[in-house]
Length: 330
Image 1 (spheres, rainbow, N blue to C red):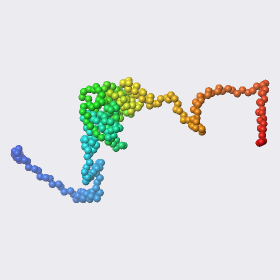
Image 2: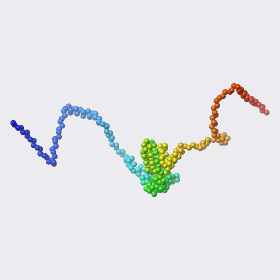
Image 3: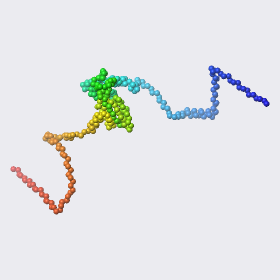
Image 4: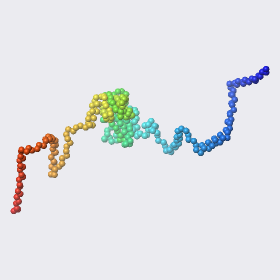
């Protein structure tokens, strides 16, 4: 038998690590048949006339806006970050700096005869759109009460050394000087009240009315408010703005104060009737005062009785004749 030997393949020598293997030759795409090429040419021609609509939602391409030739105004963000900019009047800048530093100021009005100088604790600085003016709200130590002052009616806003005149005490050390009157000066008053749901969201969005202000949800649209202040008038004024939407829990004197104001709002009975204007008589003499007639008692209803037949009615007397005498002139 004849043995057929297959030739052995020679092993390829291993290349060293530094050497790079030779790249394969790029494959040449086969030519498309003539029918397929004609279909592709026809499809490209249709796209050139009516392009396909892109799939999915169309993307909005906004053209870049050209910058105006005039100088750009400061943005809202930059203005809010630096309120001491030139957007505020000079006196409003002084008030804002005092609020940031926690100190009172001395207000001097342009009309010094009507408004005397006073020490003022600024707490809020606001711009009113109706009057187009700046206003400052805080504690006026001249009257020991909360006051609004219009900034453009002021002549000067001066710094005050220390706590200033008219500060109520005693108060804890380290208390800001612009929070002494009505808030943190004098005997503290702990307040607790309940707010209904129509006021809860409004109070959450507003700045805190007093120091250590807490608002706790109680469910069913109710919230409990607690804070500490020192002026009962300021507390009552803040509470009464909610009307019947607030119920005071503590203290008892605040409850009595709200009841007194509510009674005066409802109106009290007048002890005496309003006087009636008297008309003068023809002779110039004053007319007599009107008499207040008392209401007559209602007569009892009696049933109608028919006359008895056995009784005869008496004849009514006839009216007498009156003779008129005539006298001739002499």
